[in-house]
Length: 417
Image: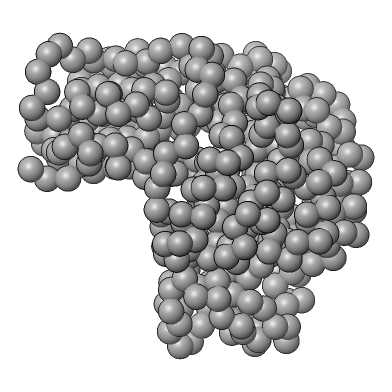
């Protein structure tokens, strides 16, 4: 019996959950299966999921094909109708050990083809213990799932459900376990990370969790937080950024646009000035901080002037790393019904945003030449700085080690040590 094959599409949280599913499948004795963990963020993401399912089914004849993830949760009937698919699992079901026992060779009983319940009825997020993934350098810990907001372009709340938090004590225990296994860096991750704690007794905030992790796990060398909503960043989180050198000076911001009317039509909770003020304050507290950001190009009704506001945001906020998304209408969202921007205009604006982002990245990299950085090695010849810039080494170093290096130059999109 061969081990199951897993394919992951979409976000880091999906990748984390794939690792948890591997453990669940192994414990259940699952073999000869292909598991595709899908993304639903755009219509293109669903198309790619179908393409991946067909490819893997062709390459693995006779294997049972299991489809899960956000696209499976939102559109179970779409995947159940595919002849290649044996089982469709919802986002809650994929983390349930009982669902995996149905795929074990010795399972006796009826097996439904679709196991997808109402995600909005899920009230808890289980903390599945995994040993990290990718490399021995960095581990990701899910501390939150779901989202209570309803941005007009986003289908994800209907794939992930309402916001749920993992209690701080459970998070601390898992991070301590990972540190004991040799991980030097941990990333806190979730769908809407800054909403962490709103459903817990006493309604703690993300800054409380960060402080507790750093206090209770003194052996943790580095702590990162994944994408946040800057408008929801609490005072203790900002205090930790200013005073805790083990909290890395790299924040990825969910900004999406740089014009107030666009943000209002997106149903975001911040204005343009809020984003600029946050970046100014964070940089005042931690001068070496860098910012990544998600930006959407060509949102419905976006004019040239509105787009210019997003373009200028790169400079006004001092952004370094951009994730640029050409707007793609997602069926079931309000934005899909709004007056669309022509496709060629969307592509041209996305290209201009990417160019601005590449120039900002280059400025940051050039400014590091001659400076000394503590680099976490992700492979024998590549690591990352505290600000998440890649560094290449001519000579091999131990994977997972923290290496002090002087930056000698810039090689493409990487620093060279």
